Length: 394
Image 1 (tube, rainbow, N blue to C red):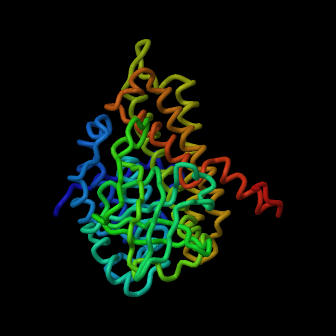
Image 2 (cartoon, rainbow, N blue to C red):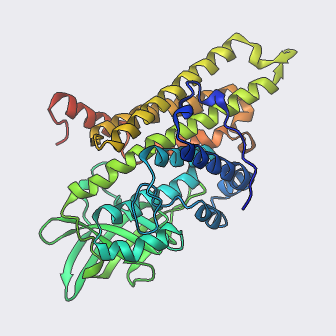
Image 3 (cartoon, one colour):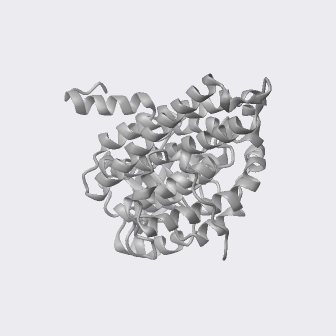
């Protein structure tokens, strides 16, 4: 497939951090940016407004061969952590719903299997998931347990040659159509494990949630599990408690920090273009001091989020990233990116709330990004505990 590659907008990379990318990483960035501009941009506003998932995007996303990002083997790309971050950044720059669909599938579902699955489980699931022929979901959050997901109540009871799951989950991306959903449940000994529930399993019911104010083009579901039988070989072999679940969340939290960068870059780019083109009082608003001050502030915040993520990728690549380091990046970047998107919406005035002008969609999506994978409050407590040695959690 031949596509026209659009050169990166340097104004959204003020410190020229992309100049440090390898040739392969730059080529990846350009392919993703072309995908966003040619395949996503023309259709996403309509899907977002109708709260419908753009299934027609999935085959085109599959052609990019990026699912599985850093996973080695099993037809996965085996990327560097920096390249994986660029994937999250560029998908979010195009649209937050597409980024969330991919993050759930590739980061959470494939990541859990890659980290905690047996060799047999990896061989069975990862290759078709890498080709996006099999779609994954990750069911941890429950109606009564969001921030305190460690307290999950979904149960897994031994029964013959497997387990029987009972409980409920909420806010589970992709679950209404996923081919396999990793359901996190507590066994009779109190240990948390991951169970691969295949599409069509009796007792598994997923209903798409409605009424969302952001990420409208990706489907989250409420799940009820009623005597759902899972064969023993579908329990993630190397998961022995919530500590292992948290390993997956730590890795994907870094990806969420990169998502924030993408939203901020998009908002800054559109705000600059609008300021140059929009005239008021007889001249482009880009010439007004208040507008220039606002754009400079947005550029500073966007650059800060980029610096956090480039350093984060370096620490990940060296195996030195901790849960708390990931939390600090997510905390900072969610705050600053949401502020950038808010400033962009303000700069565009009334046009800022129209989907055709893009920035309002990014602002609404950033409200969701700031919530999932741990709110600002939870990230602050995780970092605070690391700084002081004292836990503020009960």
